[in-house]
Each structure stands twice: as C-alpha cells, then as structure tokens.
Image (tube, rainbow, N blue to C red):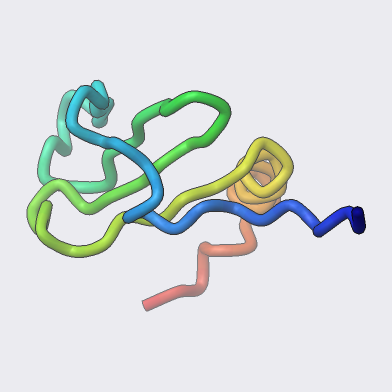
Length: 76
C-alpha cells in the first residue's frame, strides 16, 4: 500500500450544518470562522451561499502569521 499525501478537504467534504460561526462583534457581515474537527473554515458573512475556505492547522498558522506580518495590508 502506498501512502498518499494528505490534503485539505474541500468544503463539500465537511459537514458544516452544526458549525458555530464566529465573527467580529462589530462586523457580523464580514469574515466568519468555524472550527470543524481538525480544520478551520472561513466564509463571508454577507454571502453564506459562497463556498467557504478550508484550512488545515499548518495553513491556518501560516495565514495568521501573514496577517501579523502585514502580508494582506495592500490588498484592495
């Protein structure tokens, strides 16, 4: 048997029906985050029909580090 590399699941692979979505108190229509099993799922609060983003633990840590370092400050 060969070991296949792990992959972050697609949103359709996760059951998000019981997810508890967290948002900034002053921006409930902005980004929302839920912790589902070992994954972190992000969606836009004003468009819940849009597909969410799914991060594994390492991807989430890299995202948080990029936020802290200002990697996204110049985005439109």
